[in-house]
Image 1 (cartoon, rainbow, N blue to C red):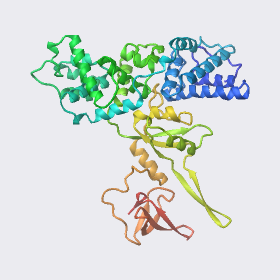
Image 2: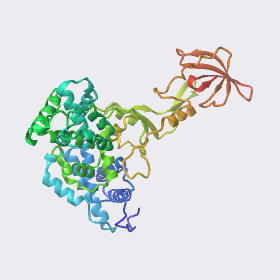
Image 3: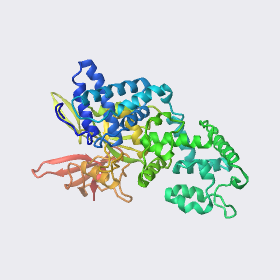
Length: 476
């Protein structure tokens, strides 16, 4: 977008706005320009992470970006500098284009009023991870600790307060299943035909204040048993952990406030995000997205694309420096080894199959947090047309076909189907993948502790080739 081009102020997208920012930043002196472009890059990474690059710019965009910078671990001072830079670039661009009122003005004022005290969350990533481990092992708990763990799990899966969970009746399990099947299963384990309520808390004998004291005591003892923090009330405790999980899952601050109905005391930064009226599907989808972070997940394969000028080695080095707050994924970057003679030496060169695509395997709930740390180097593919941040997992069947086609495999791919026999010497085989797909060959022997097959192939020109191939590419 050129600087003399008019822009429809009702339809400008985030990507178009970023283009204007880059143009404005490049008009500054070199040192200033480099600094400004870092701020623009952070704003762009925010758009990529939430999948809103092609969405129309809204009033909440500045607040959501501020929340994103907080989750990424930027300091209060750095985030303020980036906000000032982008706000200034917006004002400069507005002098040349018909742009709406700046969405950054309100946030700058609110941030200044709130001060550095807003740049804090009661529950950090390590505490959240420890809680997830505790809940995954809740079946090993007994007595009141098990009861507390089940109430906490149900609240986190449904965004329900402990007081409302305590008042669930035995005939409400079907309604609970409409929100979460897992929550309904938890409740089902406590149903007793002799009780009116699901959980045995003597609800009929206690006043609301006494019931809250009972619930808070249960949750406090459970969390203290693992050295985990808790708040002054049971509702504030569950709310703090639910909010932390939502932020780390990439849920927008506006959605968090809309589900809770207020700003959680554990993350006052969300007060800058304006509530939205979520429709039924969006409300349910938000709860399900957070719930998935508390459920056992099967790791899946995803694809990231390297940003312009970034090499795989740079991403690999960054992944090796990730601290305990980020689970490093399994990486698959298939390369062909090309041998060539230079003088009297043989040099092997690794050439990637797809130079700017890196495959990685992790839990879906960890993807957003991962790209908060490497988003300046790469971005993850999302499902198109969904209008939200929805990372595109690669179907297992398609990824298996891809591996067989290129003749390279990940560690989680089976070595061979059950019952497959090793060919006998001189037995004829067919290559079903890789560079020699479709060729007939003759088996000679196994090498490298039976992990490779040594084959002979007779070419059309009469030349005989001897190659080592993965057993998964061979069929009798």
